[in-house]
Image (cartoon, rainbow over all chains, first blue to last red; front, side):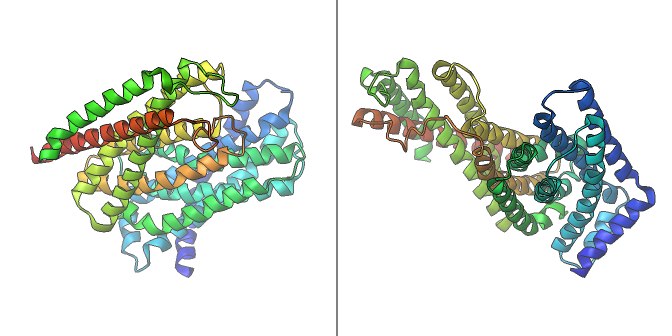
Length: 219
Length: 217
C-alpha cells in the first residue's frame, strides 16, 4: 500500500511542478461549460434538466484529457520501463496511477461545479447527495480509464483511440450518474438503485483491472 | 476434414427449411388477445436468432481472450478476432431488423429502451475492439491488448443493460411472457435458431481458415 502511495506521490509531484495536465484539464472543463451555455442560450429554461448532462459531459471529457496523458508522459521519457523495473507488484503501479488520477480528476470536478453554478446562474440543491453520486461515478471513471489508458499507450493513435474504447465501457457510469443527478436536482432522493449499479460497477472493474493490468503494460 | 465439406450444405439446407417455416401461414404470431399481429411480425424469426448469435459470438471472444491471456497461443487470438468480426456484423443486423420491426410496431425507428440501447452499446464496444486491433501493428502485442479489452467489453455489457433498465422498457419479453404459443411457432423459431447458429459456425471456421492462411503465407 505504501508503494502505491509513493507512485501516486511521484506522479502528483511531477504534475504540480508543471501543472501542464491539470491546467489543460481545468481549461477544457471550463470551455465545455462555456460552449454548453452558448449552445443553450444565455438563460435556458428548465436548467435542472440540462445540468446533469452538462456536468457529466464536462467531467468525462475533461477527465479523458488527464487520463490519456497519465501513461503517455511516462512513455515519452522512457519512465514506464523504469516503473516496471521497480520491485513492486504490477497492481501497485495500477493503484498508484488510480490514486493520482483520482486526485487530479477530483480537483477538476471541484473547480468545474462552481464555474457551472456561476455561468448558468443555478444554485445546486442537495449538494451533499450530488457529491454522493459524483464520488462512485468518478471512481468508476478512473478505474476503467486508467486501465484503458495503459492499454492504449502502446498503440499508434492513442489520443483518438482512448475515447473510442473508453466511452462504450463507461455507458453504465454515465447513464446511472446522470439519472441519479437528474433525480436529486429535481428533489427526489430515491437514488439507491443508481448507487447500487455504480457501486457494483466500481467493485467489478477494480477487481478485473487488478487481475489484468499486468497484461496491459507488459512488453 | 469431412465436416468442413458437409457443413456449408447442412447450413444452406437448414436455412432453406427455416425460411419455408417463416413464410408458412401457420407461423403467424398472435397478440395477447389472439389477434393476428400481421406479417411484419415475422421478422422476429430473424431478429431473435441474430441476437442470439451476436451474444454467442461475443461470449466466444470473451472465452478466447481469457484463454489467450492464460495460455498464449495464436489460435485463441484468431478465434477472438473471427468471432468479434462476425459478432459485429450480426449485432448490426440485429439493430437493423429491430429498427424495421420497431417502425412497423411502435411507429418509430428507435427508442431508448434497455435492450435496444444495450445492443447499440454492444455494437459500439466490439467496433471499438476492432478499432483497437487495427491500431496495433505488432501481432503479439495486438493479441495481448485485444484480449484485455475483450474481457473488459464483455464484463461491461451486462452492467449497461442494468443501468439502462433504470429507464422504463417497452421491448416485448417474447420468450418469457408466453407470447409464443403453438408447436409450429416454437419449431419455426427453433429451426431458425439452429440455422443461424450453423451459419455462425460456418462463417467462424471460414474466417479462422483465412487467418491461418494469412499467417502461413
